[in-house]
Length: 254
Image (cartoon, rainbow, N blue to C red; front, top):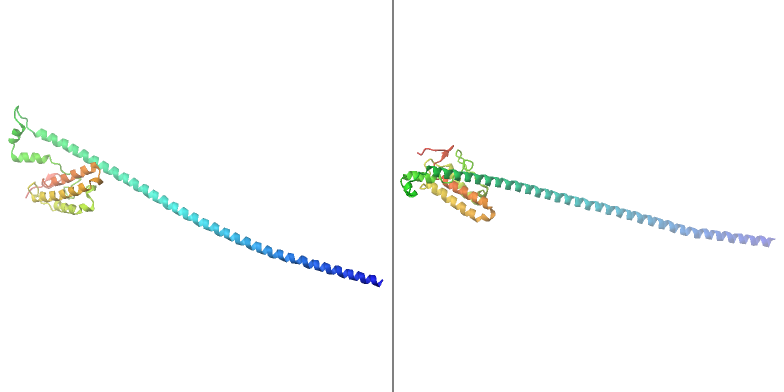
């Protein structure tokens, strides 16, 4: 009986020992699993942070792209505005040239009409030279001067004597001659006129220089603009042939 009790006690002890050992072995994997979970969670947070950084960087790049697009749109708008201004300026110049051409055509037709009206009728066999020979020298000179092209009041103000220069002559290279001619006409005396006057010689000298400079710029001008500018210079030179005027009335010579 006692022997059986001892054997049972031994068996119970062995069973308890085995159970405790099994529990100990089971606890070791549980701890390892906990460490693995913590590590995995840390890696997930790191990846999430990197994703947010990439997202923020992409937003910065998009903002920069938007700014570049806005600058490009502004440049296009500015270019279009300049194009519109250039077209408007071109239209204004065309209108000015058309006005100048119409004026000169009308003036030439009027001068031709007056010349024909003032020409005496010659008898058969009488030459035109003989008809002119009967005219006084002063009348012939006056008739020749009448046919000379002159400036309009819009181009040379008869009151202020201010010269309104065409666009082609407003450059810096014409500044010296512009200043000289403006001073000549501003300080002009009533008796300063005529082909033999010193006033005419000075005006013609500066006009000739401007014509020479204008020929060097001929490639930069349209044919119509070049012709209109040359006509302006011819008219300005021819103004020195006539007495200074106020409201179209010649000033009395002193």
